[in-house]
Amino acid sequence: MNEKVVEIAEGIKNMRIRGAGKIARAAAEALKHFALDFSGTEDKFLEEIEEVKEYLISTRPTAVSLKNAVYFVINRIKGESLEELRESVIKNADNFIKRSEEALELIGKYGAGRIPDGATILTHCNSSAALQCIIQAHREGKEIRVFNTETRPWFQGHITARTLAKEGIDVTMIVDSAVRYFMREIDIVVVGADTIASNGAVINKIGTSQIALAANEARVPFIVCAETYKFSPETVIGKLVKIEERDPREIANPEDFPGVKFRNPVFDATPPEYIDAIVTEIGVISPYLAYEIIREVMNLGVKSEENRY
Ligand code: RI2
Image (cartoon, rainbow, N blue to C red):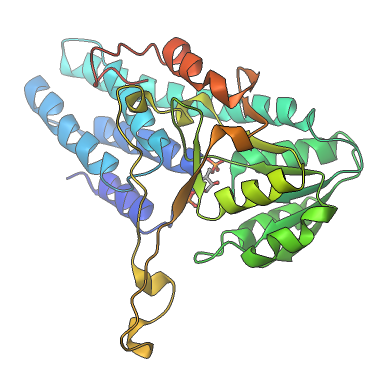
């Protein structure tokens, strides 16, 4: 297997590369490296790229962004000769990365509009899309304050807190279990997404659904920022989103707790009734429009499961 592909795939697996958008762009980059470095016949190219596809998709099971990126590049391969095939993969990968970066910019603009001047925002984990909205609101001159969860067990909240502080935004980090305690101070919750199902349920970092419940109880708006490639075509044909369970040693050393079992699911699902809006690059929508996004943007042929994104 191509060295660069292995380096990226292992980086995604061990979370050196993380965040649903970043892993999608990294997967596209891996396919580009495969094409750049390949030497052999056309048939071998097509055979090996299938192996690379399966390998990349196997690295993390929940974020559909990863699969959608890989399918975006592979479903659009055109050409007969090796040169044409390679060029096509490189072009598709570059195209995906560019579209993904442009999507973030637009999400920032649209999402910032939903953040009132003087707002206290709560965010969870580390989402580039959510941060884009918060930072954009700040750059537009809005006086905002952010509470962010540290986000056990990987503490992605540390990245969020540092990023916001660097931007000069007033940020306060809290433990995950303090969310309801602070909810009375919050005006809006802004989070990202790893996958959005056809019924509008949002799969995001573990703990998101508890935050949504607390927000709902306190009548605090809850918005999700997500590029359209976070929507899952295969949920239309009845597939359930697989929730990744990682090594319990990410929580504690089981040897220190004889007789104790550990579970470490890293995502959960927030039902659409707890979500006020989803901010995408094609507009701010209700979660109940998820199916429309999947159908129109991803051109889903429900007849073919392969026909993703
Ligand atoms: P962006 C992350 O997953 C978090 O759950 C975050 O909310 C989501 O991806 C979306 O991130 P992980 O890779 O694509 O940390 O908005 O497990 O950056």
